[in-house]
Length: 402
Image (cartoon, rainbow, N blue to C red):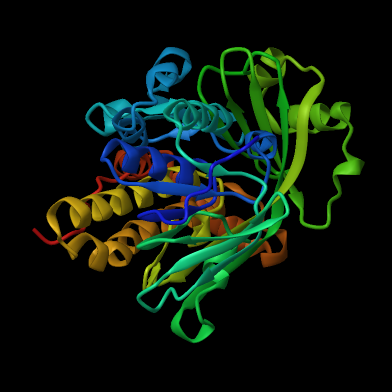
C-alpha cells in the first residue's frame, strides 16, 4: 500500500493498536494533525486476540470518536457476572450495586477494525510495517521520529510523541533509565486461552475458583466464546489439544456449566503470562506513554484495554487544550492523573487475581486465607459493592481534589 509520508505533523503516534488508533481519531476530530507509525502489518494487528469487556468510560470515548455504531449494534450489554466457588455460583449484580452502571462485551479485534476503517476512510496517514523506528530529541525542542519504510529512510518532525506501542515497544525504551522507576510483579502462572465459534456457556461471564485452578468463561458474541484456564508458566501450547482443553474446563466447572458447555474446534489457542507492571512517570519531555507502553495489568477484571482508553482520554484532552487554548495544564498533569487511576486498577486486578487463582507454592495458609476472603466477599453486600464499582470502572475524577 502506497502511503504519502509527511515531513512534519503535530502529534506522532507510535503504535496502531487500540490506544494509538483511538488517540488518532480523537485528535482528528479536534482538527489536530497526527501520523501513526506501526512496525507490524495491518493483518497482524487485527490478529491479536485480546480483551472484550468495556467500561462505560470506554464506550463513551468510542462514541466521542465516532466509531461506536457497530459496537452498540453487535455488542452485548452485561449487568452482572458470576463467581463460582465450591460448586456454587454467586452473582455480582453490577447494575443494582452501582446505581445502574453496566459493561459492554465487544471484542478488541472488532474495536480495532472499527478504528482502522474510520482512519482509512478519513485518509489519515498510517505507516504500517515501519522498521528501525527511533525517537530523537524527546528532551529537547526538536523531537522527531526516524524510521525505514519500503527500503527508504524517513524523518517525521513533530511537537509531541505519543508512545502507544506496547510493553516491548521502542517508546518506553527511549526514556533514560535514570529518570523512570518501574514496578513489576510476575505471577507464577499464565492463562491458556481458547477461542471458538460456539455459543457461550452462560449469558454472563463466569470467574471460577476451583481446586484445579482458575477458569474464566467469557464471550465475544452470542455465537463466539472465549475460555481460559490457569496453567503453570512452564506449560507449552503443544501439550494442549482442543479435547484436552475442553476436558479440563469441564473439570473446573459446576454441574450446570458442564451440562450447558458446547465444544468445538479452536479458532485460536495461546498462553499469556500474567504480570502487574507500572512505569513512572508516563511523560518525559515531549514523549507521553499510553496503554501497555506504561503499564500492564493481569487480565482478571478486564482493566487493560480500559486503562489504555482512559490514558487516551486524558492525553487527547491535554493536546486539545494545548492547541485550542494554549494551556499546558493537561500536558503537565497527564502523568499524575493517569497514574492515580492506574494504581487503583492495578490494585483491583492484583486483588481479584489473588482471590480467584491457586497459589500452591505459598503453602496451606495461603489457601485458608483465600477461603476466608471468598466466604466474606460472597456473603457481604459491602464487599460485593466494592467489586462491582471497581469492575464497571471508577469515575475519571475519582480521588481528585475538588
